Length: 195
Image (cartoon, rainbow, N blue to C red; front, side, top):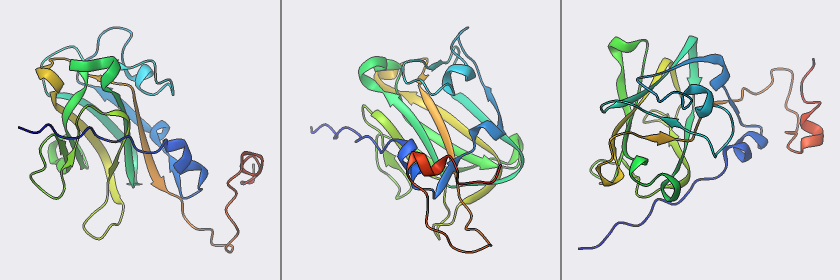
């Protein structure tokens, strides 16, 4: 019996932002969790610190609900997981669902150890960023009011889960004034918009 290869880490999402083609919109959403241990909740999931994490406290599936106030275009979801630090707390099967509310969520991506469908991605002992495209069959970004991340299983049949960071990205619209070169250095990015 052969063991599957470990999931290679994706690029740091901050590199995506520096290209000027996407921006992080997690701060525009209302976040909720199905459960959490005290001191290991949404604040730790969104604090930009890879040493902190959300820890669930209950039965599976463990849910992260992300609700926007208006219909929002989303392109990529980035999740940071670290098998070396979290072992049995590391997710092995995740479902990403989108919809208008809790009652009409539809699965857009299912990430699991086994590759059964073309939409499923392999997630084996991840250590780094996992990039989940939230696009349709024509590679167009999804428009939604709500995203739900459901942790369906953990490595080594663990009960509770750890997620260290979650980021949500939207594509940046081209300027209607005209096309300007993208400002990608930190010095230029300070002055890229009118305040």
